[in-house]
Amino acid sequence: MNYSQDNLMFTQSEYNSNTDDYNNSVTPTPDYDVSAPCYHQKNQSLGEVIGPYVHSIICILGLVGNSLVIVTYAFYKRTKSMTDVYLLNVAIADLLFVISLPLIVYNELTSWSMGLVACKLLRGSYSVNLYSGMLLLACISTDRYIAIVQARRSFRLRSLPYSRLICAIVWATALLLSVPTFYFYSLYEPSHSEFFFDQDYEQETTYNTSEYVCEFLFSDNNTAWTIKVAVPSTQIAVGFFLPLLIMVFCYTAVIVTLLRAKNFQRHKAVRVVFAVVAVFIVCHLPYNLTLLYDTAYMFEQQLCEESDTLQVVKTVTQTIAYLHCCLNPVLYAFVGVKFRNHFRRIVQDLWCLGKKYIAPRRFSRVTSEMYVSTRRSVDGSSDNGSSFTM
Amino acid sequence: GKGGGFSGVILLVWADFCLFRVEISCLRNIKARGGCCLSYSKGKIPFSAIKGYSVQTVTGICPISAIIFHTRRGPACTNPGLDWVMTYVNRLRNKAQKVHRETSQAHK
Image 1 (cartoon, each protein chain N blue to C red):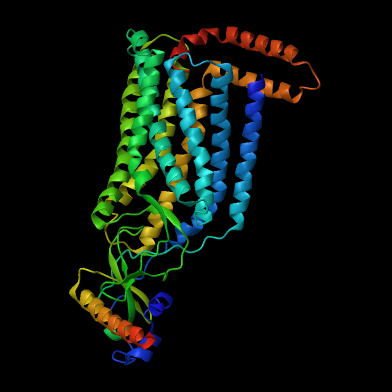
Image 2 (cartoon, chains in turn purple, yellow):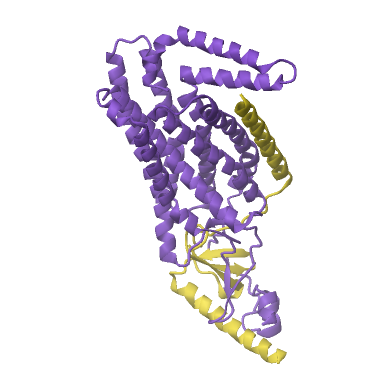
């Protein structure tokens, strides 16, 4: 038994010492075309750059933006409308996402030093936040559609408890769709090479000495084939195309209604809608198309070069998709006049806190409130338009 | 008021934490990950060139099943659906069994 554990490779020297049957040292005629295992070199070196550098920028931007949204709701603006509830939930989903991002990068670079629980939790929460974020954006578009196009029904449908229920359903759906991710992601050494010494003795080799990965692991081939297609397919369908369809339908109706209305704010509103949809498409369409292509040809034979290029495209487009969670606070929250005013107050209060020991705080708070109220009266007319926004 | 400032502090701590993490990860080098067979070799490999074999299944990170023959010129991915591949596997397996028997007898 010692033998098989120490010498897992069936090497030429072992032939020599034990059996000489096949040790004829005939130079092999190259009448066959060898295909060797592929290591995705380009994608790995790209990952070394994108992982630590680009993702940390996304992380910091996302942290700042989404924290500001949450802080605003927590301390300055009570969640009064349905949109408020959605925006807060989007910010929470995006924040959780950008928090998990550096942890995933860190673990990928350190052979998953944080262990199996971190592996499942980080991959799972990534999936939950992806689904909830995307579905909530669809909810926001539906909310705006009801507010503007179905304005008569708006009061009944846009109640606060109703929106909290929808958010709960969204989070539950996201959790449910992430169950396979929680379940099948596992921590292991990708030593795909099993070496059979014996018919009833199967020994996993450490032939490819490699680090631990946190990836899908299945007990049998059929489950592997099913889940490897089902998970990305669901992500593309529910995590992209469904929200996209809802958004395109709702916002098209919104734009049509806005263009008919006589409101000098409408042009700004239309521009905001275009920006929201355009950014969504620019961020997520390339990644989802790549993912779709990858899923469709997953089990086909591929050339190493081509596969490597596809993985590079996937890494790049995924990073673009990640960028969306930094843009959401700008596109949804800070576009709103009210929200910007609250934001100004946060900046002022932070400023005041810094000056805590120099100037009495009550004084500056009065000035900040005066400032806000004057801004409000200037922008007062926008309240009509902001039933749409924010 | 108070809350805003407090959250600001948390935010800064978090940003610092992120930067710290980045610095750590920069210092580390990525080891090569286990490769996967993505296509099969064409033609039949002479048995004399083969030193051993491994099995690649779809249950892990790899997309296709394959038998990897370790030859003098390096690993060669082959299609487990082909007859000659499985014949080779059986021959290697028999040989391994023989080696195993001899070794375990020698150790007794």
